[in-house]
Image (cartoon, rainbow, N blue to C red; front, side, top):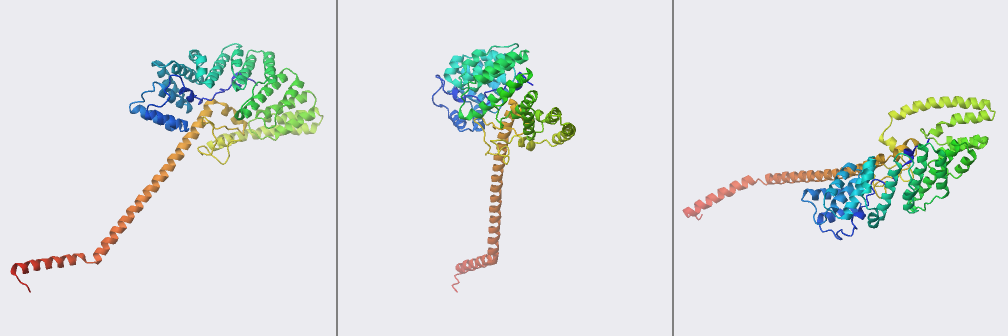
Length: 473
């Protein structure tokens, strides 16, 4: 049930580039000395990342940005990371490292190169690149980047074979930093891969007892979910060890709106059943059965679990009925899975992401959708089948990129509509002009201008002849 890679996550999102840290180094220019660079920075701080990236690339084609060394390349690389363009960012950071640059710029370049390699899953080169970073200097320039460096190096150490000690990395992070808990949790789970459940249980128990996080307001929900993830893992290990009373004790602290409530309810039912508290077990299963999530593995075990409980309660008729219902349930489930597979579309996937921060009435590309500082959609899946998909870093970035592309499409369509309106205006003006010309021509024809011109020329000719012959009459 447990797997080290299954519960690991990159605490710092891919798009967290720390661009502000790039611009405050002691040797960095305090003002933009190039108009294009200043324009790009202005666009960046306005949140117009695509425009900033465009400005930098246009400036590059027009001779580049002078007076700022390699700062523009670092900013461009950070912007590329913002849009998930990991390979392109890697090329830029490698280019920066080949140039004669300041110590702080080189330090940042090594850090970002190591981060790119880490996100690509190329761990040995990532570790080698991060070892080139002067951690004290990086932390002094930008504390958040220093914390991220500590977190990444700790995660890389945990990926090495054998049980690794990351206590120093954990203690180096502030108590309010969630990375501290993630590292401790992953370190505890590492014992399971080494076949030492007792050590994992002890580590999780310590983490639960001394949960160190005092999160900021925007991290309250994540910290609460992380604490409950620890509780569920702890309870599952107690179950595997046959200590059902401790499993029940741990699961009593779970919220009913927790993202892990389904696993908690099933484990609670199993623990209660093994304590011969069949009424509590049945109540937990009934609560679980009301949560209609097609792919929840714990929900699918409810029909058989209920049948087992009724059998233990000596209610043979009910037990037999539930065993029959379970068989019918799985046949229906197979059919519904095939239907859902064939009907899978972008709309159905996004419908499964509707949560506290996304209104079902809104679609990707809608400017009203709330995003975080890095353009990510803080979605909460309504369907368990999408939970692991959302937990994948690549999918999170693809979703963010798709949202940005749809916004771009909406912008282009808006401009197209404006151009069509302008073309309609021109066409209308052209029609008005043609109508005016036709009206003028008709009026001129009605005035018989040709006849008046002929009479005028005839009069002029006669007058000239009379003057010549002095014919006063």
